[in-house]
Length: 99
Ligand SMILES: [Zn+2]
Image (cartoon, rainbow, N blue to C red; front, top):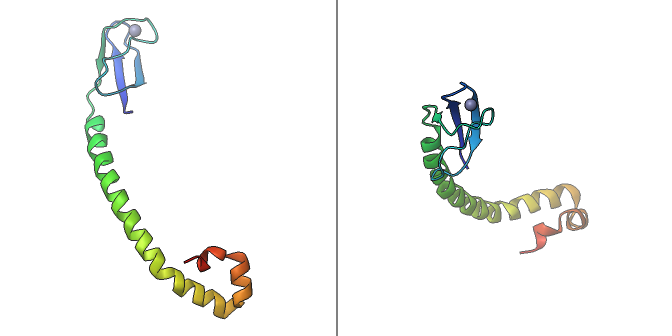
């Protein structure tokens, strides 16, 4: 949920409140007045757009990562086997052999 900044019109208290975009402003925590003004910030809109983009690019990069990983695993395994010997690698990194 986005974080909003508010200023109470009555007692001038500035406070932060985290709530859904569709929800209305919470009352002032200092005096309880409902007469609060959201401070002008474009952060919620930006965050909304950013999280939407991040969501789609995250799943894309996850796929990339997975294919990269399956590509790299045999190489890594071979490297480790040539350095440490197969028994040691099997014992310490059995997932490298799980294909
Ligand atoms: Zn107040």
